[in-house]
Length: 291
Image 1: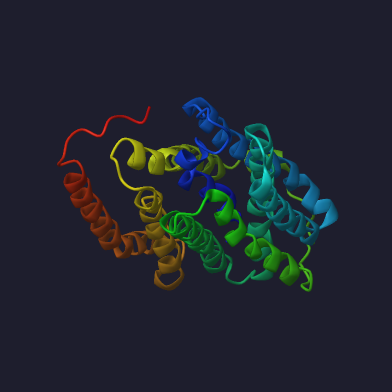
Image 2: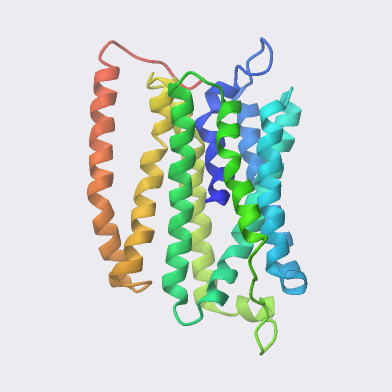
């Protein structure tokens, strides 16, 4: 859930950020750079953490990840300029990347007899965290508060996780057979196929999600809090899928199909609601474009 903050907080407030630093509005390019910085930090955290966890243990990096997220959220509350905000967003991404890298093998090592089921739980809670983050941001917007307040509201989560994990013992990330070399993994066709699917699917999903609230507000004319809530309808079905697969059938195709069918009514309902809102909202005329 702490990981979800790093990827879902920024999109809710893109339009609000345009007016946060002086009288000059941030350009769309500058807003896009913030998202790019977050994902650059995410990529750095993932790539750097992988080989180091085997040597120094998972607990250290889980704590570093939560600490970086907490520090960046605290910094975002007080940043005076765009440059400092960009740095804080980058650090937020690094913390999220570290957690993204290390939590999956930790959960798999803790539950060797039910790895698929445990991984479904873990990934579903990322989506639950996304819903919590988006809901908190949307509530802050509805109350008329700023994005800095949302950072303050979410700050206790990584702090609480840091304190909780400090008392826990983590399993070793290296099995008795030793480390698996990268070259061995790259020879697996299923691994390469999964990587390609994740690359293409993630680029599509997150690329759209980064701009969805800003588009809903600027082009469709929705109020900020409704525009921010549009991202909720993207995250909520994924949490349904992850939780549903835990009970229906694990990672097998039947489980995936059944979980998707369970989440489908929620998606259809959300799309129908937003379609009606869009028609009603645009009845008075064209709302213009994102720029």
